[in-house]
Length: 129
Image (cartoon, rainbow, N blue to C red; front, side, top):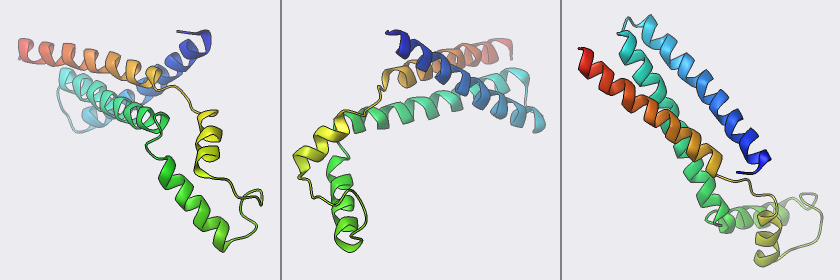
């Protein structure tokens, strides 16, 4: 990973830790067992991060470009002040969008870390129960 990707990965791990703590606290409030709270927290975080990572991956491949271009064209037709005033074709739109895409790998990798932790705590939950 590049240095920027490493920082993005660490930021995603930190955001995941916050989500895990919130789900863990909710589980404790509902008086679930400790291992179940850990497992639930890690699993919810893994599903969120991997799901968002897969959506970002699909966006990076251009899956939503036609929809975005269509909405932009409709808005420019009905609201003349929207945009920079000049019309662009779909190829120029895709090229412009491809310059600002963010990588999906840090989200998917951090979600995989939380999924592995969830599976470990799930095994401990059944082993200790």
